[in-house]
Image 1 (cartoon, one colour):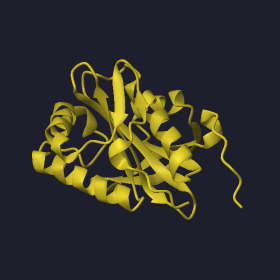
Image 2 (image 1 turned 180 degrees about the vertical axis):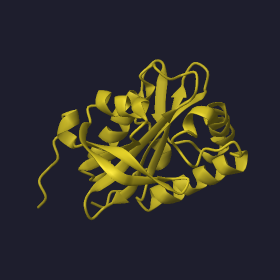
Image 3 (image 1 turned 90 degrees about the horizontal axis):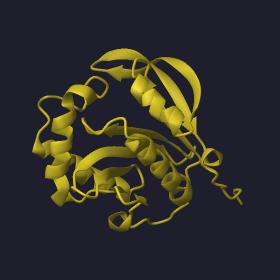
Image 4 (image 1 turned 30 degrees about the vertical axis):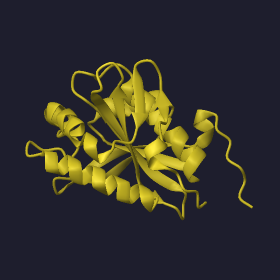
Length: 196
């Protein structure tokens, strides 16, 4: 599938409270603020999130996000609280394998905004986008075995737990066991046309 998807026009979810869409480069300070507010919680599970995270890191991430979108290697979105304009979360489709029509689905929510269903909303919106627009037929959510919050999001998003995979992730140089969940189009009620 060789569809061009206009990144700048991709609002994949919108209701009266939240909008899920890619961020532009000019929004790097908003992303930086969200990450900095959340370092203690996110850094427990994500190696990229450290106390040294800087505005330059947010800018670099957004620049790479645009580049990866253009070559269909990853699709990054953020959740924006419409009333305040705050970035309150992020969801990504990355590690795309066009050959096997699969990718990874990851998410995080800003500290102080957890427990509101934001990650579930974002995960389902990103999955629907992936299945409808990119030709992917499988998404994997891989959560460290101890990351119960992320696992609950996967379950609430309709994903199926497939296994506990030994040494599935490397975190700060150490192999970690992880639970692997999957989402396929039928989980969201999406039918995929058969290949010709």
